[in-house]
Figure 1 (cartoon, chains in turn yellow, orange):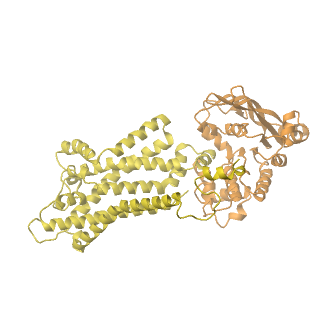
Figure 2: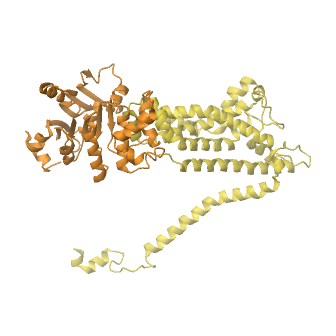
Figure 3: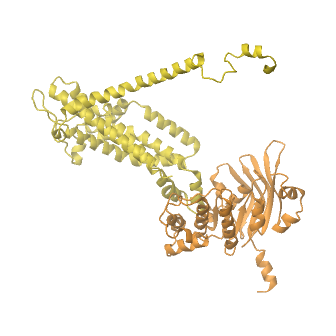
Length: 305
Length: 268
């Protein structure tokens, strides 16, 4: 027993057992302070890029942005015209819209199937496939869309760009829908089944309404991802100096501008007015992505269950 | 009505369980159950944890169908119809045989819609306001919520929520209401209210209630079934029915030693 032999107790325990006071000189106290400092420092290092990028964009972007930027076409080279990104903004919205129209119904239905109706073994492989799809580099998704639509119709188009974005958004929407539905408590499903509801009534009227905020979050995050993508658009939508023609025929036969491709093209342009427009467009694109993230946040906090 | 007829009516059985073995996968959870539930009576299932009383209850409205590994041998019939016959639609069964769960589980909808939901999905064509009012009155909740029918069903107290769930169950006008420990999540005052409600409900409905609370069984039930659990040679816990009789008999003069021990609090 330790209490029988205080001397050996002292020698066995590196920390003085008798003292109740805080000892700033003990090794473990020093080590604790050091480690706390270390993780704080590394956290600071981790968020420095975020702040640098943000402030760089804000400083350079705001300088070149004006009211007219939203309504004008990109500037020609070798002019003093500041121009605008009006057509690219519209192009981005159109292609994200096409992407949404394709991926939201398919993605939500697939998520419902996965969570509610699929056999566990099938669900396992489908989830695996979805994860693989979400890991496919976006440039490869672009190649695929190029092969399927651009080669077939022999033109860059809004449809091809939207199709590529839809493939990128699809796994995000499937997974968030699937996860959102799985979070809905089994209790209310049983309650619904218990009053004589069948499967589709339970899913449609009880489970999905409870999961709507989480599904909205998933869709918004998918939009944020798609709006910022460049690689899949470069050779599916291409670029266009002019206003998009909104007729269906034109959407499938003409290249269309987008903010991200505008940034890519003008960012490496040797002409100053084009470079400045790239800054302005970067700033706006970042604001768009941030806005959709904020919307997602708000939707998530409005929980229904 | 002559006395003989009355006796017959009192003992008409509405649910009949014959030689039922209930399996989860290979595991036999409940063995050899023979049990009748009488119409317009309250039947209580009591017994220690894990004896399968809730499992049996969930067989009566085919809620166990939701568990993929579930399997039933033997026969469970409602009047004279085999509930597990291949042509029986479990959705229709659950409409006739309603359920109140252990934890109050109102839908994330208004109080009104909580009641109206079951009626709507079952194609009710009548006056919905009237049905909601009637059901809430039937569950002794109307006076407390009549001014806040548009409020979220989860915003009322736990005891009120459970009565809302009972109102929801009776809104589809079932024959039988199954209650799976309906008071275990409630405070004593709410428990008394629900018990009083059970007394009123048995005029119109047949009630089967699972309870851990023996005083509750003795207060509300006409018939009590005592279940017990034994450990098999393979180390599985297997439930079985010890005895089923009039509640007074079970509590005052049970046939089996283990029933006597359980109701006097010596185990379980």
